[in-house]
Amino acid sequence: MNPADLRYTRSHEWVRIDGDTGTIGITDHAQKELGEIVYLELPEVGHVYNAEDEFGTVESVKAVSELFVPVSGEVVAVNKQAVAEPGIVNDDPFGDGWLIKVKLSSDAEAGSLLSAEQYAAYLKEEEKHA
Amino acid sequence: MAAPLSTPAAPKRTPLYDLHRELGAKLIDFGGWEMPVQYTGILEEHKAVRERVGVFDVSHMGEFEVTGGGATGYLQRLTPNDVGKLGDGHAHYSAFLTEKGTFVDDLLVYRRAANDYMLVVNAGNTPKDFAWASSRAEGDVGVANKTDDTALLAVQGPRAGALVDRVAAERVTDLPYYAFKTTRVLGEPALVSRTGYTGEDGFEIYLASASAVKVMRGLLEQGREFGILPCGLGARDTLRLEAKMCLYGNDIDETVTPWEADLGWVVKMQKGDFLGRDALARQKEAGVPRRLAGFEMVDRGIARHGYPAKTAHGPGVVTSGTHSPTLGKPIGLALLPTAASAVGTEFEVDIRGRGAAARVVPTPFYKRPK
Image 1 (cartoon, rainbow over the protein chains, first blue to last red):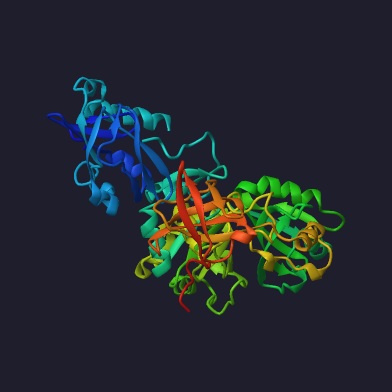
Image 2: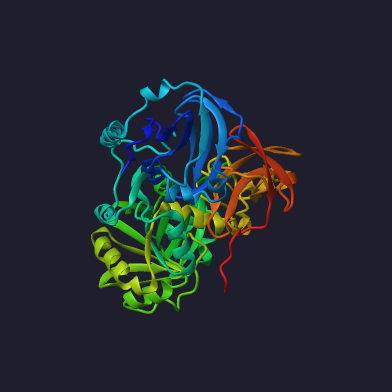
């Protein structure tokens, strides 16, 4: 159920690389762990991040978590609809619940991210230790 | 995204643990107990309690029996509320206070008969409270920890009365608030009180641990037509906060007095001496420096437990904060300098390095329609 065309982080973000644009969101596992999301704090367009920088926070009724960018780049779009109705991230984390789009500053980094298969294996491993 | 919650080793489990798993609960550690934080979702469970009925397993709460010829006098000295005013079948909210007048714990006192009481304390404080209470028992006073033998189910919401009336051997909706009776529920011996921690009408059902699974299943089954949901600690927290009920460890602890916590009504200064009384008299005389106030956010974001507050009269601290499902906005409680605690006063909360405006508002945030 983790789409095969995405790349994943161990901190439960995903990125979809399309040309020089990366669309970033959180995984279905992440939204399930958080529960109902009530707030998103996302950056303004124009912010530049290095991979693994914190770019915002996602907040559910019970917890707040930081968001980390999987890839370096400049923010070119922010999902305003998700900010207005954060429940979208619960309903469709890999689709309408995307968070930001970045213009990639390097195309090499995506290689160090997890494939869907690797991410699924990682989740299984994490569960064992929980 | 960093993991929001962790599970430490070897927590205690209630008799309903397997049923929680079966019902699909997400379990977390709470006060050393592995408890359901949610089943279907906090918002949905919250709504079920506000509009229909929900049932919570709160068997992690601690129960002590206090008996013997000296029991009433002992509780009068150990707690600030007036035990002498309690009749058989009645309960009240009270506390254990330190000599400084601060909270060892908040608790309920049930008078079952003359010199026969049950105290209900917070799960995480049970060992501390038992040591506190038993070390202060003298003469003809027995204090027994019944926590492991006792299960507790809270049935809460506007349809709670209809449901509990159906499953109890006797009518319970004739009980006034904070009264109780000893009866049977689904055939099992039970103490049923009209109490709760949600701001709704509701009942708490004390049972032998061995009866818990049968009664929980029966409540879910019989409650189906009322739209019952099993509810976790997540919804319990949002419900209690909307009703401005304090959570020990968040809003009150061994640094906070009842005056500061806006719980002065619990303290009966006229009843005679009790532990903490002198310090409370002194604080009242000198002036209460800070007060627990309800607030709403003016700016975006949720101010959570421990976030610093900045007021025109000095620093304060957020003690509880959440997204209010009923109001659809962030609310919270903060200990603020008394001069900055009046309704309408604005202050600033440091939300992870960002200053966000908040405003003191009247409480409770939610009051159930009569």
